Image (cartoon, rainbow, N blue to C red):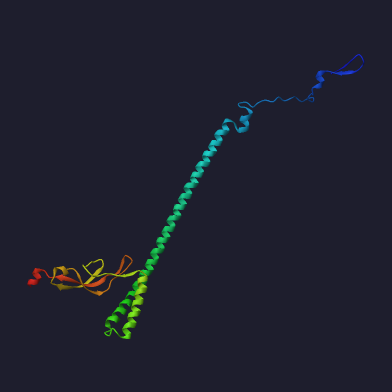
Length: 208
């Protein structure tokens, strides 16, 4: 507000030093939001902490679920690989078994040829013997093993073709002669040894 002095100079009152808002506008007062201070708004307030904790818990549960699924997938893979290895081993064993079964008659014929040759010093006998040993070596590399037929008769390893009368009780039930060799492949009997088994007559049979 201006006033005029005695000398005609205008004076500005103290009220005119403060800036005034344009006409039609009102001045806004800064107020804090209800229910909390400025820090609560900036940080999310009390409700924001609960929301963050819920998100963290959800993330922890999801991570645990992913770890569980990864462990299951890893176990499934190990089981699959073990199953594949078992199947491969079984297939190899079956292939070897079939091959050896097909070749056993050839081995038998080699041995019969050697038994039929009377001159053990002949070049024929030596040549066949060398081929027989080489052929049997190949079968051994496939896992073929000769069954030891000596001793007591074992129905899981021996096949009794006939019995032989014996006087001694010690020979009763024992293998007396091997007619055809038996073979195993690993722990499986491919062919039981064909044998003659000793049999002691009973007292009733002896009296007859």
